[in-house]
Image 1 (cartoon, rainbow, N blue to C red):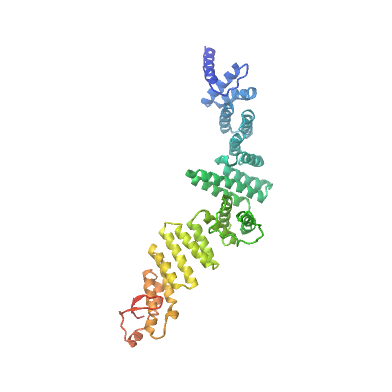
Image 2: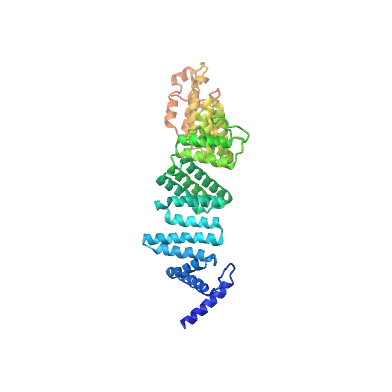
Length: 455
């Protein structure tokens, strides 16, 4: 009775199987049909041990039967591997599973696609096995060569992880090779990110992890950034017809220049590694930031450039990128910060009127920006010598009252008290026939109306 039921079951399943395309049944197909039915039924029941017996027969005797025997075979062996506790047997099962990927390629092609899945499987079980690092490295290398930008997302960071482990344990990979692989993976991430904007956060995380793995694999210091990556950026950013003979970065002026994705990606890498290696004071970090800004008008990048240009007294450029930063944000606090930066630049070059105007704009956007109040107050304090005419001690000291008022408005008590110490004395006010409380104008460029007071 049981045999009859089994026969009927096999007959029913066989009918369904024949209806499916892609089956390559042998001439004597009865046993193959039965094995196929049995292994798939056991797989549905999660009886992986029993399923394996019939699957193995199919793989050995009819390897070209159908691609599904390899697809399901991976499921069966993954089930067995997860259950197995004996490390020797587990490793044998892993090796057999990996051979199924090879068998699938041999019989059904799609090498790039299958190897993409194979290396993911191999990495899952071998990523902590030092004896497998070289094999995994070669497997990843071949898989990337076959797939290019179609490589699976799960293999992006995994490849860099194996590069790190293989280099640290074998020393067979040079720093240049590591950097080349990192470049390739980064470009793939950038490509995927630009074509899958819905998952931009995910790709940014991939790149962050790649950056961390790079710095954990090779020494990324200022020398590396400056002497290894710097010349490469120069070469890529130059016009194709230009002969690269310069040894500095003066030719890179990316304000109105369009750069290729390759150049922009390298610039981003240099900038990120400059931050990681604490090399942001280098010239190449500045030029990388400028190239980045041509591609994406980012507030933080413009702010960095402005700060660096101010530090080396490139005042015109500092003002230009301060304006660019203001245009790159809708945040009033950030705008206030950059108007203050402009005020500081004009203060340094001696244009007090423009300095005050920009500080006032800063305050209008963020009334709690005490540094802007302080800057204006200091401008007034420092104008005493420039503005005094020597005709009236009271008139000459009105700038200190103006400074006091602005310091008080900004909550700067200490500075306000210092300004008050410079108010005219009561004796001076009396001698000039003036009275405390009367309204006067400071004159000079300050041109503030103040209420006369004594120190």
